[in-house]
Length: 268
Length: 172
Image (cartoon, chains in turn yellow, green):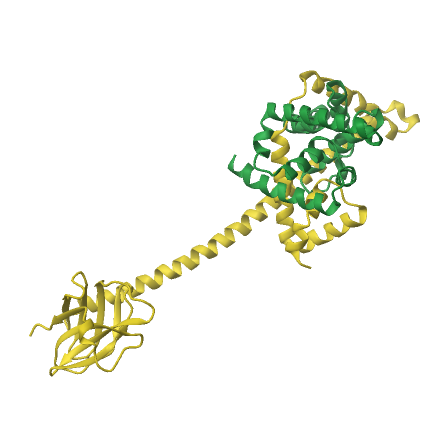
Protein backbone atom coordinates (compact mmCIF):
# COMPACT_ATOMS: atom_id res chain seq x y z
CA UNK A 1 0.00 0.00 0.00
CA UNK A 2 1.23 3.49 -0.81
CA UNK A 3 0.78 5.24 2.52
CA UNK A 4 1.41 8.76 1.19
CA UNK A 5 -1.30 8.35 -1.42
CA UNK A 6 -3.64 6.79 1.10
CA UNK A 7 -3.19 9.72 3.46
CA UNK A 8 -3.48 12.38 0.79
CA UNK A 9 -6.82 10.96 -0.38
CA UNK A 10 -8.28 12.54 2.77
CA UNK A 11 -9.67 9.25 4.06
CA UNK A 12 -8.37 9.85 7.60
CA UNK A 13 -10.12 13.24 7.80
CA UNK A 14 -13.33 11.51 6.71
CA UNK A 15 -12.72 8.83 9.34
CA UNK A 16 -12.29 11.49 12.04
CA UNK A 17 -15.56 13.11 10.95
CA UNK A 18 -17.27 9.71 11.24
CA UNK A 19 -18.21 9.81 7.58
CA UNK A 20 -17.03 6.42 6.36
CA UNK A 21 -19.18 3.42 5.60
CA UNK A 22 -18.96 0.46 7.96
CA UNK A 23 -16.62 -1.43 5.62
CA UNK A 24 -14.36 1.58 4.96
CA UNK A 25 -14.17 2.23 8.67
CA UNK A 26 -13.12 -1.35 9.42
CA UNK A 27 -10.45 -1.14 6.70
CA UNK A 28 -9.07 2.11 8.09
CA UNK A 29 -8.94 0.65 11.59
CA UNK A 30 -7.07 -2.40 10.30
CA UNK A 31 -4.56 -0.17 8.54
CA UNK A 32 -4.14 1.95 11.64
CA UNK A 33 -3.10 -1.09 13.61
CA UNK A 34 -0.60 -2.02 10.93
CA UNK A 35 1.03 1.33 10.07
CA UNK A 36 2.42 3.66 12.70
CA UNK A 37 2.67 6.47 10.13
CA UNK A 38 -1.11 6.38 9.79
CA UNK A 39 -1.55 6.48 13.56
CA UNK A 40 0.67 9.53 13.80
CA UNK A 41 -1.20 11.25 10.99
CA UNK A 42 -4.54 10.42 12.59
CA UNK A 43 -3.38 11.91 15.85
CA UNK A 44 -2.26 15.10 14.14
CA UNK A 45 -5.61 15.43 12.35
CA UNK A 46 -7.53 14.86 15.56
CA UNK A 47 -5.46 17.47 17.33
CA UNK A 48 -5.99 19.97 14.54
CA UNK A 49 -9.73 19.32 14.64
CA UNK A 50 -9.76 19.72 18.40
CA UNK A 51 -7.90 23.00 18.22
CA UNK A 52 -10.10 24.27 15.42
CA UNK A 53 -13.26 23.47 17.36
CA UNK A 54 -11.82 24.73 20.64
CA UNK A 55 -11.13 28.05 19.01
CA UNK A 56 -14.66 28.03 17.59
CA UNK A 57 -16.14 27.32 21.02
CA UNK A 58 -19.22 29.14 22.29
CA UNK A 59 -19.97 29.03 25.98
CA UNK A 60 -23.47 27.75 26.69
CA UNK A 61 -25.57 29.61 29.26
CA UNK A 62 -24.82 28.62 32.82
CA UNK A 63 -28.27 27.19 33.57
CA UNK A 64 -27.77 24.53 30.87
CA UNK A 65 -25.26 22.78 33.07
CA UNK A 66 -27.48 22.91 36.13
CA UNK A 67 -30.45 21.46 34.37
CA UNK A 68 -28.30 18.79 32.72
CA UNK A 69 -26.98 17.58 36.05
CA UNK A 70 -30.42 17.66 37.57
CA UNK A 71 -31.53 15.33 34.81
CA UNK A 72 -28.54 13.08 35.35
CA UNK A 73 -29.15 12.90 39.08
CA UNK A 74 -32.79 12.03 38.55
CA UNK A 75 -32.07 9.47 35.89
CA UNK A 76 -29.41 7.61 37.80
CA UNK A 77 -31.31 5.74 40.51
CA UNK A 78 -34.28 4.69 38.36
CA UNK A 79 -32.71 4.00 35.04
CA UNK A 80 -29.57 2.38 36.19
CA UNK A 81 -30.06 0.81 39.56
CA UNK A 82 -33.68 -0.15 40.14
CA UNK A 83 -34.22 -2.56 37.22
CA UNK A 84 -31.36 -4.71 38.45
CA UNK A 85 -32.84 -5.26 41.88
CA UNK A 86 -35.22 -8.22 42.22
CA UNK A 87 -38.77 -7.09 43.04
CA UNK A 88 -39.25 -9.29 46.10
CA UNK A 89 -36.03 -8.19 47.72
CA UNK A 90 -37.26 -4.83 48.97
CA UNK A 91 -36.47 -5.75 52.54
CA UNK A 92 -32.73 -5.83 52.10
CA UNK A 93 -31.57 -2.40 51.21
CA UNK A 94 -27.98 -3.51 51.35
CA UNK A 95 -28.25 -5.18 47.92
CA UNK A 96 -29.55 -1.99 46.44
CA UNK A 97 -26.44 -0.24 47.61
CA UNK A 98 -24.14 -3.06 46.61
CA UNK A 99 -25.59 -3.05 43.11
CA UNK A 100 -25.36 0.70 42.87
CA UNK A 101 -21.81 0.58 44.13
CA UNK A 102 -20.75 -2.06 41.65
CA UNK A 103 -22.21 -0.13 38.73
CA UNK A 104 -20.50 2.99 39.86
CA UNK A 105 -17.24 1.14 40.36
CA UNK A 106 -17.59 -0.28 36.85
CA UNK A 107 -18.14 3.21 35.43
CA UNK A 108 -15.30 4.74 37.36
CA UNK A 109 -12.91 1.96 36.45
CA UNK A 110 -13.76 2.18 32.76
CA UNK A 111 -13.07 5.89 32.97
CA UNK A 112 -9.77 5.18 34.71
CA UNK A 113 -8.97 2.48 32.16
CA UNK A 114 -9.30 4.84 29.22
CA UNK A 115 -7.50 7.56 31.14
CA UNK A 116 -4.59 5.24 31.88
CA UNK A 117 -4.63 3.98 28.35
CA UNK A 118 -4.23 7.46 26.92
CA UNK A 119 -1.53 8.27 29.46
CA UNK A 120 0.24 5.07 28.52
CA UNK A 121 -0.01 5.97 24.84
CA UNK A 122 1.40 9.37 25.59
CA UNK A 123 4.27 7.86 27.57
CA UNK A 124 4.99 5.44 24.77
CA UNK A 125 5.26 8.34 22.32
CA UNK A 126 7.56 10.25 24.61
CA UNK A 127 9.74 7.17 24.97
CA UNK A 128 10.11 6.76 21.20
CA UNK A 129 11.01 10.42 20.97
CA UNK A 130 13.59 10.07 23.72
CA UNK A 131 15.16 7.04 22.09
CA UNK A 132 15.50 8.92 18.81
CA UNK A 133 16.96 11.89 20.65
CA UNK A 134 19.38 9.62 22.46
CA UNK A 135 20.59 8.18 19.17
CA UNK A 136 21.15 11.66 17.78
CA UNK A 137 23.16 12.64 20.86
CA UNK A 138 25.27 9.47 20.60
CA UNK A 139 26.00 10.26 16.96
CA UNK A 140 26.98 13.84 17.77
CA UNK A 141 29.15 12.55 20.59
CA UNK A 142 31.01 10.26 18.19
CA UNK A 143 31.67 13.12 15.81
CA UNK A 144 32.95 15.32 18.61
CA UNK A 145 35.08 12.47 19.94
CA UNK A 146 36.69 11.92 16.57
CA UNK A 147 37.47 15.61 16.29
CA UNK A 148 38.95 15.59 19.75
CA UNK A 149 41.20 12.62 18.85
CA UNK A 150 42.37 14.47 15.78
CA UNK A 151 43.10 17.62 17.78
CA UNK A 152 45.02 15.59 20.39
CA UNK A 153 47.15 14.05 17.67
CA UNK A 154 47.76 17.46 16.13
CA UNK A 155 48.90 18.85 19.47
CA UNK A 156 51.33 15.96 19.93
CA UNK A 157 52.96 16.85 16.64
CA UNK A 158 53.05 20.59 17.31
CA UNK A 159 54.46 19.93 20.79
CA UNK A 160 57.09 17.48 19.59
CA UNK A 161 60.53 19.19 19.49
CA UNK A 162 61.62 16.82 16.72
CA UNK A 163 59.22 18.71 14.44
CA UNK A 164 60.50 21.97 13.06
CA UNK A 165 57.98 24.60 12.11
CA UNK A 166 58.49 26.35 8.79
CA UNK A 167 56.37 29.43 8.23
CA UNK A 168 55.41 29.90 4.60
CA UNK A 169 54.36 33.47 3.81
CA UNK A 170 52.27 34.70 0.90
CA UNK A 171 53.99 35.63 -2.34
CA UNK A 172 52.95 38.49 -4.61
CA UNK A 173 50.35 36.11 -6.08
CA UNK A 174 48.59 35.86 -2.73
CA UNK A 175 49.92 38.34 -0.17
CA UNK A 176 47.27 37.34 2.40
CA UNK A 177 48.03 33.63 2.26
CA UNK A 178 49.92 31.77 4.97
CA UNK A 179 50.60 28.15 5.93
CA UNK A 180 52.92 26.21 8.24
CA UNK A 181 54.88 23.06 7.59
CA UNK A 182 55.78 20.81 10.51
CA UNK A 183 58.73 18.77 9.39
CA UNK A 184 60.53 16.00 11.23
CA UNK A 185 63.97 15.74 9.63
CA UNK A 186 64.75 12.34 11.12
CA UNK A 187 61.44 10.56 10.57
CA UNK A 188 60.94 12.54 7.31
CA UNK A 189 57.29 13.15 8.19
CA UNK A 190 55.68 16.35 6.84
CA UNK A 191 52.49 17.95 8.17
CA UNK A 192 50.80 21.03 6.79
CA UNK A 193 48.66 23.52 8.69
CA UNK A 194 46.67 26.00 6.62
CA UNK A 195 46.42 29.41 8.25
CA UNK A 196 44.84 31.26 5.40
CA UNK A 197 44.50 30.03 1.85
CA UNK A 198 41.60 30.81 -0.42
CA UNK A 199 39.44 28.00 -1.81
CA UNK A 200 40.22 26.79 -5.30
CA UNK A 201 37.91 25.76 -8.12
CA UNK A 202 37.08 22.06 -8.39
CA UNK A 203 39.64 21.52 -11.16
CA UNK A 204 42.61 22.76 -9.14
CA UNK A 205 44.46 21.74 -6.00
CA UNK A 206 47.35 23.14 -4.02
CA UNK A 207 50.64 21.20 -4.24
CA UNK A 208 53.34 21.33 -1.60
CA UNK A 209 56.97 21.21 -2.73
CA UNK A 210 60.15 20.74 -0.71
CA UNK A 211 63.29 22.32 -2.17
CA UNK A 212 66.10 19.79 -1.79
CA UNK A 213 69.47 20.52 -3.36
CA UNK A 214 67.91 23.35 -5.31
CA UNK A 215 65.28 21.02 -6.90
CA UNK A 216 61.55 20.91 -6.13
CA UNK A 217 60.36 17.58 -4.69
CA UNK A 218 56.63 16.75 -4.61
CA UNK A 219 55.24 16.57 -1.05
CA UNK A 220 51.58 15.96 -1.97
CA UNK A 221 48.41 17.88 -2.88
CA UNK A 222 45.67 19.37 -0.70
CA UNK A 223 42.51 21.47 -0.81
CA UNK A 224 42.24 24.95 0.60
CA UNK A 225 39.62 24.46 3.28
CA UNK A 226 40.95 21.81 5.65
CA UNK A 227 41.15 22.43 9.39
CA UNK A 228 43.85 20.94 11.60
CA UNK A 229 47.06 19.23 10.52
CA UNK A 230 47.28 17.52 7.15
CA UNK A 231 49.68 14.63 6.75
CA UNK A 232 51.70 15.15 3.54
CA UNK A 233 54.09 12.87 1.65
CA UNK A 234 57.32 12.01 3.41
CA UNK A 235 60.35 13.66 1.78
CA UNK A 236 64.09 13.04 1.78
CA UNK A 237 66.62 14.82 3.97
CA UNK A 238 68.08 18.24 3.42
CA UNK A 239 65.05 20.37 2.60
CA UNK A 240 66.08 24.03 2.46
CA UNK A 241 62.65 25.50 1.81
CA UNK A 242 58.97 24.67 1.25
CA UNK A 243 56.56 26.22 -1.22
CA UNK A 244 53.00 25.78 -2.44
CA UNK A 245 51.81 26.16 -6.04
CA UNK A 246 48.41 25.86 -7.70
CA UNK A 247 48.20 22.84 -10.00
CA UNK A 248 45.52 20.87 -11.82
CA UNK A 249 43.71 18.45 -9.48
CA UNK A 250 46.00 15.55 -8.59
CA UNK A 251 49.19 17.60 -8.94
CA UNK A 252 52.05 17.61 -11.45
CA UNK A 253 55.60 16.30 -11.60
CA UNK A 254 57.14 19.75 -11.81
CA UNK A 255 55.82 22.92 -10.20
CA UNK A 256 54.20 25.78 -12.15
CA UNK A 257 56.40 28.31 -10.42
CA UNK A 258 54.45 31.30 -11.69
CA UNK A 259 51.47 30.19 -9.56
CA UNK A 260 53.43 30.04 -6.30
CA UNK A 261 51.21 31.04 -3.33
CA UNK A 262 53.35 30.76 -0.22
CA UNK A 263 56.98 30.02 0.45
CA UNK A 264 59.26 29.70 3.50
CA UNK A 265 62.89 28.82 4.21
CA UNK A 266 63.93 26.19 6.71
CA UNK A 267 65.93 27.82 9.51
CA UNK A 268 69.29 26.15 9.70
CA UNK B 1 -18.23 5.28 50.86
CA UNK B 2 -21.06 5.01 48.35
CA UNK B 3 -21.82 8.68 48.41
CA UNK B 4 -18.16 9.41 47.85
CA UNK B 5 -18.06 7.18 44.80
CA UNK B 6 -21.25 8.65 43.51
CA UNK B 7 -19.79 12.09 43.85
CA UNK B 8 -16.72 10.93 42.01
CA UNK B 9 -18.46 9.38 39.02
CA UNK B 10 -20.53 12.48 38.60
CA UNK B 11 -17.37 14.49 38.73
CA UNK B 12 -16.10 12.65 35.67
CA UNK B 13 -19.00 13.97 33.63
CA UNK B 14 -18.63 17.35 35.20
CA UNK B 15 -14.99 17.40 34.18
CA UNK B 16 -15.94 16.61 30.60
CA UNK B 17 -18.65 19.24 30.65
CA UNK B 18 -16.39 21.95 32.02
CA UNK B 19 -13.68 21.22 29.47
CA UNK B 20 -15.59 20.43 26.33
CA UNK B 21 -19.14 21.78 26.49
CA UNK B 22 -18.13 25.07 24.84
CA UNK B 23 -16.42 23.35 21.92
CA UNK B 24 -19.38 21.00 21.43
CA UNK B 25 -21.85 23.85 21.81
CA UNK B 26 -19.93 25.79 19.16
CA UNK B 27 -20.56 22.95 16.72
CA UNK B 28 -24.17 22.39 17.75
CA UNK B 29 -25.15 26.05 17.79
CA UNK B 30 -23.69 26.75 14.37
CA UNK B 31 -25.61 23.86 12.87
CA UNK B 32 -28.94 24.65 14.57
CA UNK B 33 -28.66 28.44 14.97
CA UNK B 34 -31.35 28.59 17.65
CA UNK B 35 -30.29 28.92 21.24
CA UNK B 36 -33.08 26.93 22.91
CA UNK B 37 -32.81 24.04 20.49
CA UNK B 38 -29.02 24.04 20.62
CA UNK B 39 -29.08 23.96 24.43
CA UNK B 40 -31.51 21.08 24.42
CA UNK B 41 -29.29 19.17 22.00
CA UNK B 42 -26.19 19.92 24.09
CA UNK B 43 -27.91 18.30 27.07
CA UNK B 44 -28.95 15.31 24.98
CA UNK B 45 -25.36 14.97 23.82
CA UNK B 46 -24.01 14.86 27.36
CA UNK B 47 -26.71 12.36 28.38
CA UNK B 48 -25.57 10.22 25.47
CA UNK B 49 -21.92 10.58 26.42
CA UNK B 50 -22.90 9.53 29.90
CA UNK B 51 -24.98 6.54 28.81
CA UNK B 52 -22.59 5.24 26.18
CA UNK B 53 -19.36 5.90 27.92
CA UNK B 54 -18.47 2.21 27.91
CA UNK B 55 -18.60 2.10 24.13
CA UNK B 56 -15.80 4.63 23.75
CA UNK B 57 -12.64 2.87 22.54
CA UNK B 58 -9.46 4.86 23.11
CA UNK B 59 -7.51 2.81 20.58
CA UNK B 60 -9.73 4.16 17.80
CA UNK B 61 -9.32 7.85 18.47
CA UNK B 62 -9.38 10.66 20.98
CA UNK B 63 -12.21 11.11 23.41
CA UNK B 64 -12.79 14.57 21.98
CA UNK B 65 -13.27 13.18 18.48
CA UNK B 66 -15.77 10.69 19.82
CA UNK B 67 -17.72 13.41 21.62
CA UNK B 68 -17.67 15.77 18.63
CA UNK B 69 -19.11 13.05 16.42
CA UNK B 70 -21.93 12.48 18.87
CA UNK B 71 -22.60 16.23 18.97
CA UNK B 72 -22.44 16.70 15.23
CA UNK B 73 -24.69 13.70 14.52
CA UNK B 74 -27.19 14.69 17.17
CA UNK B 75 -27.37 18.24 15.80
CA UNK B 76 -27.73 17.02 12.22
CA UNK B 77 -30.49 14.62 13.29
CA UNK B 78 -32.24 17.55 14.89
CA UNK B 79 -32.13 19.65 11.70
CA UNK B 80 -33.84 16.76 9.93
CA UNK B 81 -36.51 16.21 12.53
CA UNK B 82 -37.32 19.87 12.98
CA UNK B 83 -36.90 20.61 9.31
CA UNK B 84 -34.95 23.65 10.27
CA UNK B 85 -32.11 23.99 7.94
CA UNK B 86 -31.42 22.36 4.64
CA UNK B 87 -34.84 21.20 3.62
CA UNK B 88 -35.23 23.68 0.84
CA UNK B 89 -33.08 21.46 -1.32
CA UNK B 90 -35.84 20.96 -3.86
CA UNK B 91 -36.55 24.62 -4.36
CA UNK B 92 -33.69 26.27 -6.19
CA UNK B 93 -34.72 29.86 -5.59
CA UNK B 94 -35.25 29.29 -1.93
CA UNK B 95 -32.01 27.41 -1.83
CA UNK B 96 -29.93 30.25 -3.15
CA UNK B 97 -31.59 32.77 -0.86
CA UNK B 98 -31.06 30.45 2.02
CA UNK B 99 -27.45 29.98 1.08
CA UNK B 100 -26.81 33.70 1.09
CA UNK B 101 -28.47 34.07 4.47
CA UNK B 102 -26.43 31.27 5.91
CA UNK B 103 -23.22 32.61 4.60
CA UNK B 104 -23.72 36.04 6.13
CA UNK B 105 -24.78 34.53 9.38
CA UNK B 106 -21.80 32.24 9.64
CA UNK B 107 -19.37 34.93 8.70
CA UNK B 108 -20.80 37.15 11.36
CA UNK B 109 -20.57 34.43 14.02
CA UNK B 110 -17.13 33.40 12.92
CA UNK B 111 -15.88 36.93 13.11
CA UNK B 112 -17.13 37.20 16.66
CA UNK B 113 -14.93 34.45 17.96
CA UNK B 114 -11.87 34.74 15.85
CA UNK B 115 -12.32 31.60 13.79
CA UNK B 116 -12.08 33.71 10.70
CA UNK B 117 -8.55 34.54 11.65
CA UNK B 118 -7.70 30.88 11.79
CA UNK B 119 -9.34 30.15 8.43
CA UNK B 120 -7.65 33.19 6.88
CA UNK B 121 -4.87 31.28 5.18
CA UNK B 122 -7.14 28.78 3.46
CA UNK B 123 -8.19 29.15 -0.15
CA UNK B 124 -11.86 29.96 -0.73
CA UNK B 125 -12.51 26.35 -1.73
CA UNK B 126 -10.92 25.00 1.43
CA UNK B 127 -12.66 27.53 3.65
CA UNK B 128 -15.98 26.59 2.12
CA UNK B 129 -15.49 22.88 2.79
CA UNK B 130 -14.46 23.46 6.42
CA UNK B 131 -17.36 25.81 7.07
CA UNK B 132 -19.95 23.53 5.51
CA UNK B 133 -18.67 20.35 7.16
CA UNK B 134 -17.91 21.67 10.61
CA UNK B 135 -20.20 24.62 11.04
CA UNK B 136 -23.15 24.03 8.73
CA UNK B 137 -23.81 20.39 9.43
CA UNK B 138 -23.24 19.05 5.94
CA UNK B 139 -21.93 15.54 5.50
CA UNK B 140 -19.27 15.05 2.85
CA UNK B 141 -21.61 13.22 0.52
CA UNK B 142 -24.36 15.83 0.92
CA UNK B 143 -21.89 18.56 0.17
CA UNK B 144 -20.67 16.73 -2.93
CA UNK B 145 -24.20 16.20 -4.16
CA UNK B 146 -25.64 19.61 -3.44
CA UNK B 147 -22.75 21.67 -4.80
CA UNK B 148 -21.81 19.32 -7.58
CA UNK B 149 -18.29 18.62 -6.39
CA UNK B 150 -16.90 15.08 -6.76
CA UNK B 151 -16.77 13.35 -3.36
CA UNK B 152 -13.04 12.68 -3.81
CA UNK B 153 -12.47 16.42 -4.28
CA UNK B 154 -14.40 17.22 -1.10
CA UNK B 155 -12.14 14.79 0.75
CA UNK B 156 -8.86 16.09 -0.63
CA UNK B 157 -9.93 19.72 -0.07
CA UNK B 158 -10.68 18.98 3.55
CA UNK B 159 -7.32 17.20 3.76
CA UNK B 160 -5.48 20.27 2.42
CA UNK B 161 -7.47 22.58 4.67
CA UNK B 162 -6.62 20.53 7.74
CA UNK B 163 -2.95 20.53 6.80
CA UNK B 164 -2.96 24.31 6.48
CA UNK B 165 -4.76 24.61 9.79
CA UNK B 166 -2.24 22.33 11.41
CA UNK B 167 0.45 24.87 10.56
CA UNK B 168 -1.64 27.93 11.40
CA UNK B 169 -2.76 26.57 14.74
CA UNK B 170 0.78 25.63 15.66
CA UNK B 171 1.83 29.25 15.22
CA UNK B 172 -1.05 30.48 17.35
